[in-house]
Image 1 (cartoon, rainbow, N blue to C red):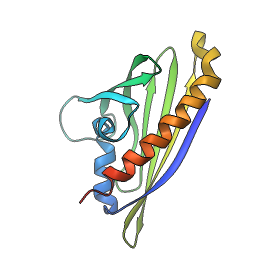
Image 2: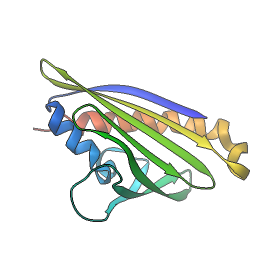
Image 3: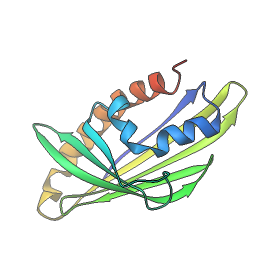
Length: 144
């Protein structure tokens, strides 16, 4: 299992930060581990909304279809993606602050099946990508 948790201070209010993060296709703008991202379906983003992300794993690209599994506007968002190789669980929480909001991103990536042998390597890569994503997230959540 690979785990990464970080909190980013944002100049956005809680509602704006939540809406930005809930549209998970935005991950392509802040996460360098995401090669491309798109929303699947129409209508407002809500519980059950789906997103297809192309995630870089070393020299490979792994398609991950995320679904919003928990949707509590302004408070909490949970996205899950499952393949035969990995299960990704991303929980994002939001707290109002005097200057905007604090956004906590907690991601767990479990390797599965024949890919389980790569767990130590994936954990190292996940930490490195997480640190870069944190900087991108900080940039995007503080744009004017």
